[in-house]
Length: 198
Image 1 (cartoon, helix red, strand yellow):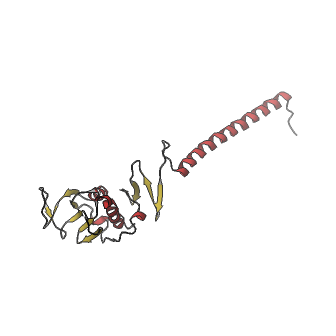
Image 2 (tube, rainbow, N blue to C red):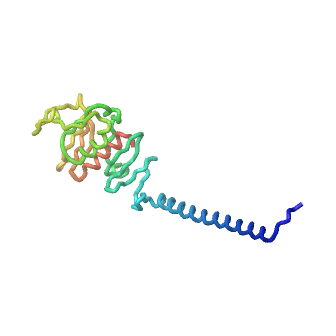
Image 3 (tube, rainbow, N blue to C red):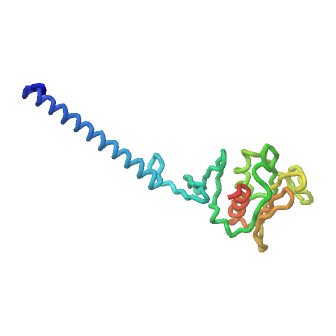
């Protein structure tokens, strides 16, 4: 048997049902607006402040352009920073025999000055026991840097190319970056990507 409900009870139930449906619809509207905003930020690449963030994917690695002009990317448990993307340096011919383990907990010496020294040092500093300026054995140096050689020590040697060819190469434990000042980041980044196997 169906229970007899008074008109007043029917109106109360209808009012309650309408209120419940209204609350659910308002909740759906709010959630869809929030969801759209979040999805739109992810799709358009904006950060939490609404600033546009540029991202590029290369061989499964996501490169994100930071506030400046650097590309930041995760690799293993570390984060690396370069001025260039791998595709920007793909025409530079270089493959290193080294890996990050070649520098782990060992001193890294730099001979020369320039953007390449900075670029390589900032990426390898977390792995090396220290980064220190050195004088390459057989060369004249104007400071009190210790003399180091390519047989025993890991050295990044940076020289200006002048009118000669630009290159990045390896001889024993030395990496040679020979480039004009405006191209040193390209050759340094080629070394970093080669070191990581990217």
